[in-house]
Structure formats: C-alpha cells, structure tokens
Image (tube, rainbow over all chains, first blue to last red; front, top):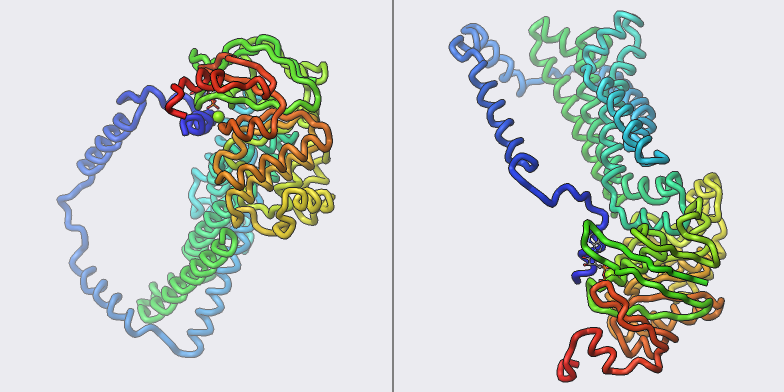
Length: 278
Length: 246
Ligand SMILES: Nc1ncnc2c1ncn2[C@@H]1O[C@H](COP(=O)(O)OP(=O)(O)O)[C@@H](O)[C@H]1O
Ligand SMILES: [Mg+2]
C-alpha cells in the first residue's frame, strides 16, 4: 500500500508540503471577505431601489407571462428570430472552438520542448487568451457593428472572440489536469509529446472539453439573443422592439422561445456527454 | 546487456536507493524482492528512464541511458509495466495496444491509426497472446482490472523492447490469476529471449518463474542470488520476520 502511495505522489507538485496560513487558503479567504465587506459598504443603500411608477409596470409585465402572444403571424416571427439567434450562436461557437482549441493547446504548454520554453509559451498565450476574453461580447458587437455595419458577421465575430478566449483558457486547464500515469506510459513506449497529446491527453480531456463547450453554447445563445439589442436581429431585437411598444405579451412569447432553446441545448448536451463517457 | 554502475537516487534528501551496481545478461529473469518502500519501484523507474539517477550510470547494450537522444531509442531497448494501471480508459483496447507502436510510427501514421487502426494484426495477435482476443474493439474502461493488466502486457508485446520491466504486475490479482499472469509474462519474454526484471511479493512465484533474485531493504541491496540459493533465512532477514510469522 505504502509503495503505491509513494508512486502516486511522484506526480504531485512538491510545494504543497508546507501549508502555512499565508501559502494556503487562509489569506485568500480573508482577502475575499474584506473585499466583500468593502463592496457592500460602497453601495448607496439610502435611495429607493424602484421608482414608484415602476412597481405597477413590473406587475403588468409579470401578469403578461400568463398570456403570451400566440397569434400565428407572431409565432412565425418568433420562430424566424429564434432561428437567426441559433444560427449566430452556432456559427459563433464553432468559430470560438476553432480559435480556442489551438490557443488552448499552446497555452497549456504541453508541447513545449523544454521547461524554459514552456514557461514563456504558457505566459504568452495566457496573456493572449486573457485579452480576448477581457472584453465583453457586447463591446465587441458594438465595435464590429461600427466596423462592418449591421451584418451577421459582426454578431458572429463578436461572439467568437471572447468565447474563443474563454474556451482556450478552459481547454488549457483541462489538458493539464488529466491523469499523469497513462501519459507516462505513453512516453515509455517512445511517444513524443505530440503523440502523447493525441493518444493520452485529448482522449481523456475530450468529455470535459465537450461538456464545457456545450455549456458555453448555452451562454452563446443567450448572448446572441442579447446582441440583438444593438440591432443585429434575432430574438433580442424583437424583444427590444416589443418592449419599446409595451407589448409585454409578445415579450413573453419571445422569452419562452429563448428558454426553450436553452433547455433544448441542455438536453442535447447531456445526452451527448453520456454517450461519450458511458 | 544491462549494467548499473553505482546508481543512486534520493527524493528531497530521503534516500530511495543507495548506490547500487548490477549486471544482467540477456535472457535473465530477475525478481526484485523487498518490503514496501524498499526501493523496488525506484530501481525499475531508473532503468526504464522514468526518473533520472542522482549519481551513477545505467547502460543498455553498451549505450548510456543518459546519452540517449530520444524516447524512441530508449523505447526500443526497454519497456515498462507500471504498478498502477496506466491505460487510457477512453480509448478502445486496440489503440491502447497500438500505443506500444508510437515509438516506431511517424506522427501522421499515429494520427491516421486513431481513425483506422494500423498494423491491426499486431494488436490482434498480441491480444490473443494474452488470452482475451475478443476484447479488441471494446472501450478500455469497460474491462476488469485483470483484463486491463493483460492489455498493458499486450502493449508491451507490440513495443518489442529487449528488456521488460514489470512493477508488481500481480499485486492486485487473486493467487490463481497471479500465477497465470506470471506464467504468461515469463513465457512471452523467454520465447523471444528478452530480459525480464519484475518486482513481486510472492516467494513461491519467484522460485517458480525466475532465474535470479535481488533483495532490497531501505534502499540497500541485501542480496543478489540465483533462485536456488534463496533460503528461508535470507528471506526472513529481508522482510525482518521471525520464523513464526511466516
Ligand atoms: N516521487 C517520490 N517522492 C518522494 N519520495 C519518494 C518518491 N518515490 C519514492 N519515494 C520514496 O522512496 C522510497 C522507495 O520507494 P519505492 O521505490 O516506491 O519503494 P517500493 O516500490 O519498494 O515500495 C520510499 O521511502 C518512498 O517513500
Ligand atoms: Mg513500488
């Protein structure tokens, strides 16, 4: 028994051994606690949160939830804009995967030839990924609308860039965190790091990468819908138009369509993940 | 064939293996005995190039391990079966076996093989050799521990290294299966006149399947004997037992 413990520790980082307050979680917890208290005190609590007329408007809005607009023509419009939103989200997430995958592999440093190069490579590509996701998709959308006009490409790129950054970051972590023993065995049979990636890291990482990508696809649908607010079309644009006209029944029809889409993706991804991991 | 010259290893100042010299001829079957923590895994990992020695040199067929430029060259000389199962659970058995070919294959061939298995006949016959031919296309995670052990052996078979290292290959098996597996392992290595070093805890199986035994205790070499010289007295001393405890 003892020997098997010894051999598994072989792969563990060494710095965990002296777990003092400052190295461990104690300091972090304290810092987060202080940050929380500070942020609570800096909110202005004295003004009323809702202005008086707003309360009745909110009541109206929620009453409309029970009577969504179900006329044939509006359902057709809803379906059409749902389709547009899904199309943006699919194109955006596909592009994000294409962008995030190579960046993630590079940022994981698993292909680096030496320890020195690994550090430089990991740092460099993590900065790139950080830059991509530091800017929110709505800001990208606004930028691309300015540059490209109200074209679908603006919506797709606005999604693909920050989502590529997020996916790349997560892919890198997942690729680093796979069990090390199978990788060691592959190296023992003469595999280069590229082959270790193909035969060890990727097969072991794929289920997690896939399920995270699907989770991001859900987020992309919401984001694509919201992006409609800058005028690019889809559910968001219709929601904004109906809201502007105070047609709350229509808003709810559109919201239900959005909820349905997200649930659908959820079911699909659960099913796909199960068939992958069995 | 295999020459260790004063090879030693410590982990963070803790001695795992005191400087040790050893010569093993081709075709020898050497059992590595010793209590847990005595340095068996460390010794096999050093020979397999999994960890680097702090001191001393290891030579395989006259080539210094430290001078070998590629994992590929090392893999053609020595293959290792680790103490824990180390297959990729998500891959089909066939790919886990063919992973033993990665040192022989180009990157493109390796990639193509994941789509449509290359040299499948090698995998098939290796799997037949270890007695589970019907599992070729099964997902590896669906196999029992004993079956996975056999797949790991099949992988070692297709790697075709000259030295085979096995770290407690039978530790997790019941006695009947343990003997079967040991039988299989020793048959396979002696058929192609490979050299075998295996750590194990069974004296009976050592006597039955090995030609030579070395004993480690606290990282020190205690004995290095042909198995017919392996007396109970030597073993009691190795495991620090009194006669009544056996
Ligand atoms: N990676 C490691 N880090 C620290 N100590 C280790 C490591 N591997 C082995 N050791 C220590 O070296 C000694 C020998 O271990 P090992 O070779 O695994 O023994 P065995 O395989 O005979 O049980 C033990 O004291 C063990 O704790
Ligand atoms: Mg061991």
